[in-house]
Length: 123
Image (cartoon, rainbow, N blue to C red; front, side, top):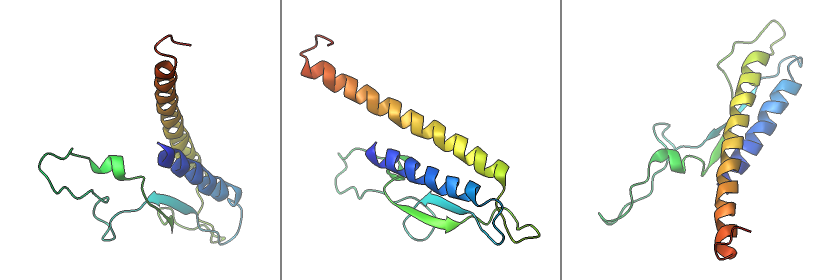
């Protein structure tokens, strides 16, 4: 969860920088992505050396590494700037939802630890 919170915090900074440069001529937006295993096909996976090992999906491991790239999904305007304010705001809203979800999970885990530390008294 710590890595997920860090990733979404860093992604928020990258998206905010894109929004701040919406009027900068020649600016190309950056995108922070979770890195894959190098060939671009799939996230990194744990090696299983025993059939009794737990199965782990790629989604649970996707936040281990990040890479910053230039977002080329939107074409450049007349001034060479390719920032789409609508697209960046949409990415910012989605990132905010994911961050809030991770915070709720962390809070629930801390509440369980607090309950156990207080011998189940709930305080």
